Length: 398
Image (cartoon, rainbow, N blue to C red; front, top):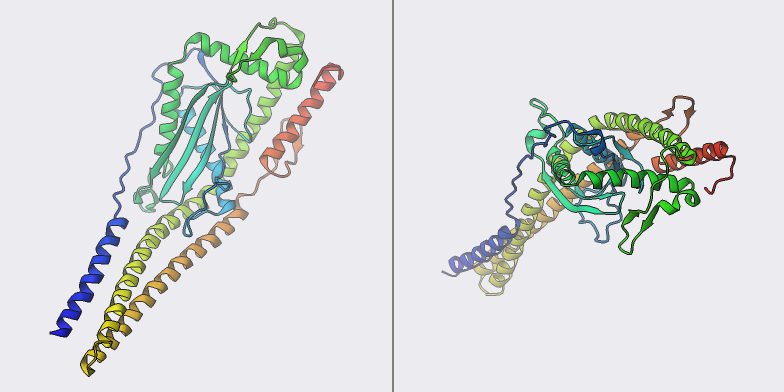
C-alpha cells in the first residue's frame, strides 16, 4: 500500500511538472510565402527614384545579451550583412519599380531613397530583420520588423527550391516600398531627385550650393531656388557624380562576386544550422524533462527512505539512484547541445576565410581596396575630392 501510494505520488509530481513545462515549450510555427509585386506598367523617366541599400548592421551591438544558444558568429554576421543587402537589391530590381538600385557600404544622404537595416536574428531556421526606409528630403517612409521561417524544403538537396530560403522577407520589403512610392506625387518625386543632386553638390562645395537648400526645424529639406541648368559649377559636380556612380557600380560587381563566393558555404551553414536549432530545442526539452523527473524521483526516494522499514528504505534508495540517473541524463543532454553550438562556431570561423574582400578593377586603373568596404569607399571619396580640386584649381570650398 505504501509503495503504491509513493509511486503514485512521485509519478503525479513528475507528470504535473512535465505538463507545466510542456505548455511553455509547445510552439505553433507557420509561415506564408509572399510573392513579389511587379510594376504593371512602364514608369516615366521622371518618376524613377534611385535606391541605395546600406550594408545591414550585423546586430552585434545589441543592448540585450544573446541567449546562450543563440547562434551569433561575428564574422558570419558581417558576411550576412552584405548578403542580405544584395539579395534585397535583387528583389527591388526585379520589381521594375525603381531607377538604379545599388548596395552602398555606408549611409549617404544624397541618394533619392536609402534603405538601412539590422539583423535581429539569423540561425538558418528564422530570419528577423528591422528595416528603415527614408528619402533624401529626410522623410521617413517606414520602419518595420520582418520575420520569416524557413521551410525544411528550402534545404532539400534533392529538390532545391528557387530563390533564397527567406525570399518572402525581401519580397515584403520590396512590396512595401513600391506601395509607398506609388502614393507619391510627380511634384514630390521631381523635388526629391533635385534635392539629392543639390545635397551631393553641397558635400563638395558647401559655399556654392548652400543657398539652394534649407533644413527646417523638423529636419526636412526644402528647395529655396534652383541653379541654372548650365551653371558651370553644377556641370562640374555632375561630372564628379557620374564618376562616383562609376565606382559604386563597380562595387556592385564586387558585392555580386562576394555573394556568389559565399553562397555555397553559407547555404551549407544555413542547412546545418536549421537542423542544429531544431535538435538543440529538442535536446533542451528532453534535458529539462529528464531533470524534472529526476528531481521528483529523488525527492520521493528520500521521503521513502526516511519512512523507515527495510523494504521502504530499499525502495527509497532505488528511487534516489534512478532519479540521479535522470538528472545526470538531463545535464548530459545540455552538454550535447553545447557541443552543437561549438561545432557551429567552428563552421562559422572556417567560413571567414571564404568571404575575404577582393581587388576592384576600375576602367582607368586598378585600385587595391584595403580594409573594409567602408574604408575603401572613403578612399574613393578622397580621390574624388582630389579630382574636384584639380578641376576647380583648388579655389572652391570643399
